[in-house]
Amino acid sequence: DQQVKQNSPSLSVQEGRISILNCDYTNSMFDYFLWYKKYPAEGPTFLISISSIKDKNEDGRFTVFLNKSAKHLSLHIVPSQPGDSAVYFCAAGRRGSQGNLIFGKGTKLSVKP
Amino acid sequence: DVKVTQSSRYLVKRTGEKVFLECVQDMDHENMFWYRQDPGLGLRLIYFSYDVKMKEKGDIPEGYSVSREKKERFSLILESASTNQTSMYLCASTGRDRGVTEAFFGQGTRLTVV
Image (cartoon, rainbow over all chains, first blue to last red; front, side):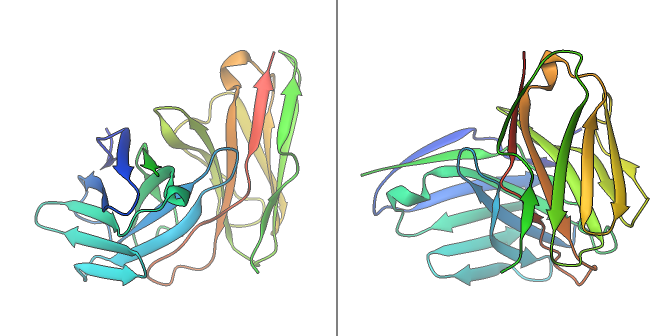
């Protein structure tokens, strides 16, 4: 059973507009969440994280929102740029698990010029 | 700059061959992981290791084994390669648990089994 779900396999956005990528989880014991970005033929790179005690974390154009009651998080990219086109993975972790992250299946974002 | 390095970017192997994928990290991390990535399936954990000579099965260990003789090196072994093991293989490492624990990934190895 999937503990971390990204229900949209793909998303297409116009350059300059907002991209919103969504992620749902089922395990209320997760302590933190991360977003990774992956280009083809490369490894994932860390983008942004959020602790379960917070509801928002911002880093430049990237903001992650966490709604614990809904077990939902989202990544906002504003403004979107063509270089943001990649696959985005949501991941969740628990303290004491030695960084053993549970990943979603990913959402492919296409930002069109 | 932290680094996880996988020995090959691209590999082509024949069915039945024994295949070794090597991963080295220079961050003195305790924990290392092997994933495979397939379209529509995301990242699936094959094996992980919390310490030298220790290993734990992930979600899809069948057909694979691992070796961790040194802290910095974690090897994935395909005992007898099959075409359904054609995939992108990703190695990752993490340090000691400190709240939010970020995984650092290698560049990936695209393995094709023919």
